Length: 312
Figure (cartoon, rainbow, N blue to C red):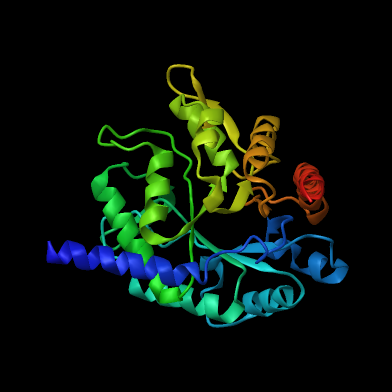
C-alpha cells in the first residue's frame, strides 16, 4: 500500500509540475505544417514558403552534427518546429532505452520545439529493434506500463509529451478498455497531452468496424495539442473486407478530410500536420496539399473569431 501511495503521489506531483510547462496551442501557430524532408531543404530555404511550421522525426537527427543538423538549424531559425519521436517504444514490455531517451532529451534542449510527441506503440523486444509501430492490448497492465514510461520521458525532458493514437489492424482478446478511454486515462495519470491522428482514426475504425464519428465525439478534445493528417492505401483482407493501410504516401482521402472537419467542429482550430513520408513528392505538390488542408482549418478559425466577436 505504501508503494502504491508513493507512486500516486509521485504521479500527482509530476502532473502538477508539468501543468506549468504543458502544451499551448500557440507554441506553434494554429496553422498547417508539414513533415520536413531532406528532399525539400533547398527549396524551403531558397523560397521561404508561407507554411505554418515543420515537424521532424527525432530519430533522423540523433547524430552529433553534419548536414542534417546544419539544415535543421537553418530551418529552425526561420520556422517553428515540432519534434515527433517514432522509436521510444512507449508500449514495450521492457524498460525504455536510456541512451535513446538521453539523445531525445538533447534534441529537445537543442531545438526547443514548440511541440513534442510520441506514438502509443512498441517497436523493441529484448535487444531487437523493429521497423514497425506495433499495437498493444488495452488492459490494466499495459495502462500502468505506458503511464510509467511517459512519466519517465516527461521527467527526463522536463516538458509535456503528446501521445498519438495508433493505426491498428487487429484487436487483442486481452483488451478490456476502449482505445479512447485508454488514451484519456493515460493522460489523466501522467499529465501528458494527446496527438490526434485523424487518418489513424479512419484507418482503425474501418479495420476494426468501429464508428469513426462516435470515436471522435468521445475523444477528449481538450487534451489535443496537435492533429495529424495523411493518406492511406486501400486494400482487402482475406475475406474481401476493406483493409486500410496507414501508408503516408498520398494526399488525405476526402473521407479523412470530412473527419478532420468534424474534429475541428468539436475542438476548434488546432495546429495540424500534413504527413507524407513515403513516395515523397516534390515541394510544390506537398505545399499544395498543405494549403488544401489549411483551407479547412481556416474556415474554423474564422468561425471561432466570429463566435468570439458575437459573445462580446
